[in-house]
Length: 206
Image (cartoon, rainbow, N blue to C red; front, side, top):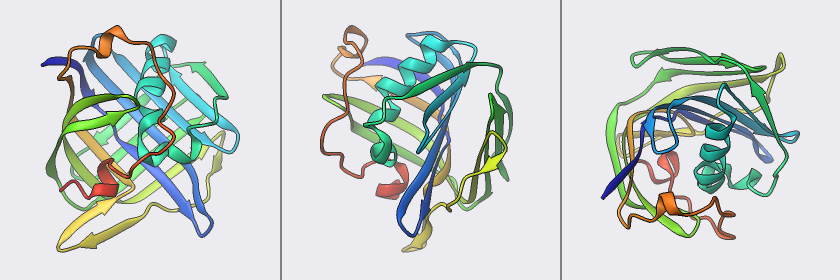
């Protein structure tokens, strides 16, 4: 099994009464087959925005990962992408939450409800299957601001059978592995037409 990426990937999906309104993702890539770096991204009705000093890495994590995550499925067909070459400032505390700021995007996560290990040996990324392991921290609060405007909506955060699950979460000590040894040989591919709710908050990290 070949390791593809080591790092972290906190995320946020905001909901209104009419459905998802926006989503955000922060990648802290300590090591990967494409290099290392930080990428902050957000998507709403105006399209995608990625922020970081490595545009190639930003494109890779967007096209190979985020477009296949179920919490981003509402926005996966929108291929309008603006990249902002800027540093991302991060303040993170596993006791209380996270703030990431850069390129006109601000992501805030707070009210950490739980900390537990998560693993999925067969996580689908389009036509490929990866192994994913991390430490998952569901949060009770999540906010997204783009160009000074706070995006409407709230994360979905519930407790089931004594376990918290949330569409606002920290994900740290994250390792993506390629059991078949083919991931690094392929080009980014389009998302599958049917996306099952298998990402962290949807399956409750059980």
